Image (cartoon, rainbow, N blue to C red; front, side):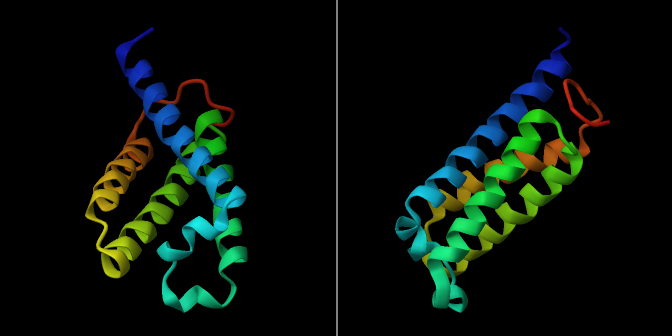
Length: 122
């Protein structure tokens, strides 16, 4: 297998697994994530966190399977950018900001990657 195809798959697997796992954590224990939610959304935190978790799982699975890969990577990038901004403004958890910035860059690399290998859609 060509090195660029391996790179493409490893990038998709890396970001996809992280999104699915964090989404599952949000669904199974939404109370643990309340502190990361902007005050604007504090009226119904559990529902918002669960919906966000479901969205993360859906986007992660789309990236893993290559189903509308570029659209999934765009959605992932938007979600990660919102998380980064929220963390910077509200919490100051710079270690999380750095981690999520790395994930954002992986997601962006999928958007601009011309390799499409083992995908469900073109």
